[in-house]
Length: 351
Ligand code: IPM
Ligand code: MG
Image (tube, rainbow, N blue to C red; front, side, top):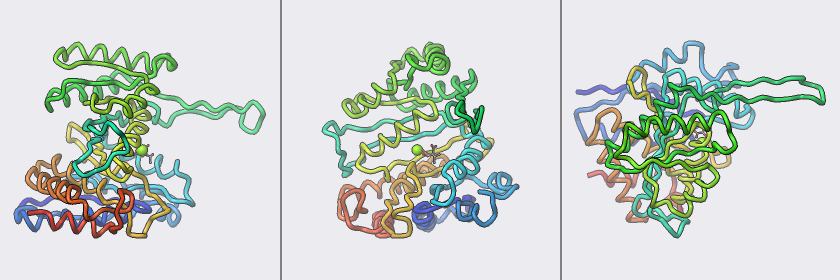
């Protein structure tokens, strides 16, 4: 029996609703397989926890979290606690602390998903830098309380950080039969960070003459996403650009609730963390109508990363079957089904 330990951080809002569905699905997969056993460790770290304890996670949180094979996270953020607190005190410490410097975000229109775009051949991946860049959390406030108040928000781009994410994107392309890597830049306006980002791309690209390398300024790239998604294979982007592009990408599939995100520590020194890309959506929290797909797809990514290929395939096939049949859908993708009805349909489709 293979024992797999998963740390669960449902977080806030619909994060709680969707992680429940992830657990249900994993339990079913274990039952079908017979040879795997999932051990779940439920960690209540969230904005609610913050209001009670004054911190998003306990002091030894990272130590507790490290003891597992993978982490499944829902979403963080809830009214009453500034969004910056939940991100800066829970999400970013995990991503950075576990050196999950790659954030893999597949944007793929599975059969049955209805894109709002005319050109709906959409199947690419955004490789988002996840450890530095615009989200390095550095800066300062000068002359506070005076009319000269000045706020400086820094962005840090290191040789090591840029090189490893570029290389990861090119390697991914090569290993997965992709032929093009497109870098999101803005080197016309950001004369230090993005000029350097471009230089690193050029340097790394030399090692991959078999891959077509391009760059596009982020403003033009948003247009390109809408007009020519069929031309995109692998996008490599900084932390902020990757964040923005992937909400756009998921919306291109019909809903922000669809796409998953894998925060990967490629060296395997620390656990990787999987989550839907959507937020905690307080407006629909607890109503039972959140789309579980983003999380179930994240579970699929997690199973692949854990080398549980059979279960991963079983889950993806079941997701595709249910989407293709089209009878069971949550409201965000045009149906009237509940979160658990959608999950149950996917579970029932596993043969
Ligand atoms: C995401 C989210 C987070 C991010 C927020 C909650 C800080 O938008 O995972 O895409 O920007 O990374
Ligand atoms: Mg985001």
